[in-house]
Length: 263
Image 1: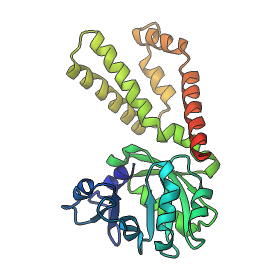
Image 2: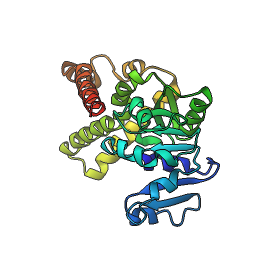
Image 3: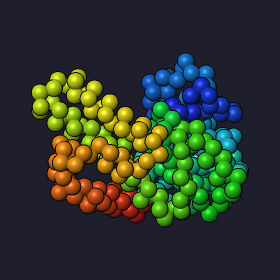
């Protein structure tokens, strides 16, 4: 997720004052940025102080590591952070309270839940303020995530639920695309033809939804001629109770987020 956000921040139209510093575990990964003048990359493999060096003097620090790694990382960088720095979590299930417990009182904490379309500037990011977050802090972080898409501000109590919709949502879409592609191949199309048919249909339908100003229901009805082929297909899907399936799936994701928060 960190790499996805970084890709958006490196878009030509985006300017980050003071440049960007990143850390990777391996020197090989860090070397991938050797030809990117806007990024200074450190590797913990070769520099034990890499994380501390990366955060020194930074106005915004984005923590995008696996949830289990968060407490140790925060302890490591706590006294290297600039007073007044804003620390932003991208770690699923790790609460603001956990961050604030491990960081100085002079540091502001926010939680975020972006998604991978940040790579193409089309992310949807959920953003929640912490107990030390000022209006200026919130505006600053919102502006950061708006460089890679749109932002929805929610109370922290809603952030895990949001993660099950927009955070995990791209995976649900790709799963549907996989299933439709398999159905096309089963009907005799080549893998290449199936990809053109299905990927193009998803991309076109999504763009039509964005540009038309109509609801998904209205657009579905437009395509579904009475007693036609689409109506027959939709009837089969409705018998499968897709809303209930998606409710069950997102409930399972929410349960897992709460498990992560509980350690």
